[in-house]
Length: 109
Image (cartoon, rainbow, N blue to C red):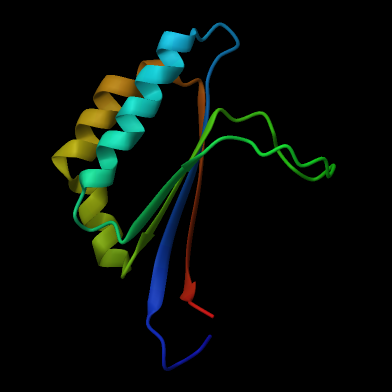
């Protein structure tokens, strides 16, 4: 870790939709993810889908990747308690069958 740069908190979520998910279901989940970009504690957010890479170690089974950067663990906790995030969980939970979350903390290069 670089002592001169502050630690960033990274929150990465992979959303897996059921095989029966319709295009409308996926669009609703995407709209929900996009709504969370308005949460003020997020420094940077990225919404992605599986890339066309072909290495055996790559998971291509998820539907959406939600990657957020926060200035601190406290800012990420603020995001977790934010009403927009609460609304997302309530409104969109029906659209996924599995969620995997990776949280990490470290300095930028």
